[in-house]
Structures are given as C-alpha cells and as structure tokens.
Length: 159
Image 1 (cartoon, rainbow, N blue to C red):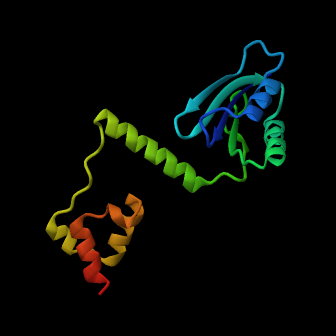
Image 2: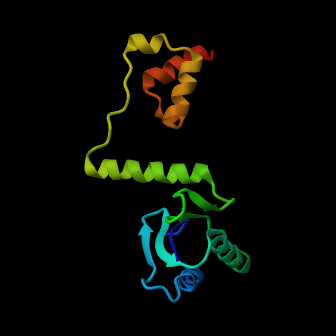
Image 3: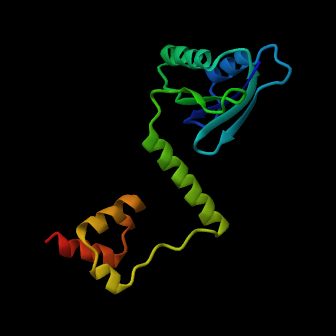
C-alpha cells in the first residue's frame, strides 16, 4: 500500500471523471481519499492505493483522451524516496509560478504583511546600466514593476 499526494492543477472543483479515478485508486483501502481545493490553483488529494505513480498518470491520461481536457498533475509517493515520481509532461511551469506568485501576493495583501517595494535613491538609479535595469525587470516580473525613476533611466539609456 502506497501513500500518495496528488496535485492536480487547474479548476479547484473536483471534476466528475477525476472523482471516479480517485475512487478507483483508493478502492478497498482502510481510509477514504481526501481532496482539498487549493483556491484558484487546483485540487490536492491524499490517499492510500495499491497503484504505482505511473499507473496513476496513466489513468489521468486516459481521461484526458476521453474528454479532450488536459489535467496537469504531480504524483508524489510519500512512502518512496519522497521525490516527485510522477510528473505530467504538459505541466506549464510559467503558469504554475505565476499562479502561486499571485496567490501569495493576494494572501500577503489581505493579511497586511505585504513587503514594501524596493526603493533606490536617485543617486543609485542614475548609475544603473541597461543590464542592471533589465535584471530588475526580470527579477520583479515585468517592466511595469519598475519605479518611475528606474523607467526614466531606462528611457534615457535606450535613446
């Protein structure tokens, strides 16, 4: 018997076909499967099963073919080495990171623990080179995240 943690990204409402998979996977087990919605991210499920992670991926792939839906999942065998042992090749990391980043930012804003934006003194901004500003854009997640002084410096450097 394996202890499985399954993360299915997308809708945080369990899909009908997904419920039948989880029921099949946890059939005849001592404890029922537990599914928790992850607001805006998907569903997190815990269950005991006799199936291997590759078998679990296969069941989800069969439903994808049947319904035409993509169900990006990560399967972790908690009894194994603790690593990810089943991984959906259709996983979109950019989407995943963006969703988690948005969720964390929303949580921090609601809790009042949002970090103050980075500030640079005028002297520091006027010494920035183009590579420095491009690094800031990359690190912060977009040109719109630059301060007004940093944007002015970027315009100055790209004339």
